Length: 158
Image (cartoon, rainbow, N blue to C red; front, side):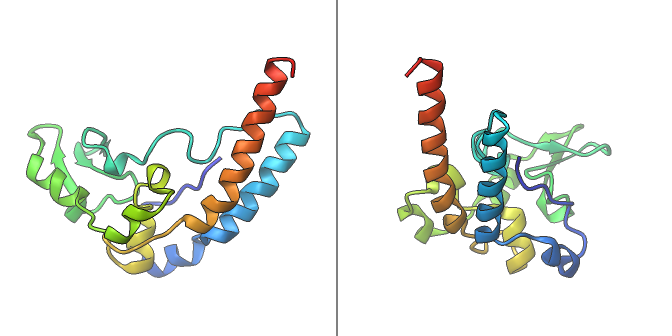
């Protein structure tokens, strides 16, 4: 389970629907607690991979054939190419370049990779704004570690 957002069209409307980092952490912890009681397996919120926005070769393609870095940022200024002409290396690098030096010292950067650019865009009105998920991660990482240890012990008869 992870948050899903509609593509940005109306900042005010989108901002109202965003769950704040700490609220998300609390909600996911309650959800995982119930899932564990029901003996359902849990895939951690950040387990899939780092967001495709930061991957040099990860893209979203619209039905019209336009290529973007984020499936939630489908606006012309975030377009990096199209299926007919391919990806513009210059545009791909321009869109992906986010200079958030303060994030580099954070212990969660391997997981969040400077935060969600869609949420930064909605809340800060620009993709280069800071969107920190540290509060959510602090609560969730402890849960994931305990969950994973328990699962491995159960699998190995411990």
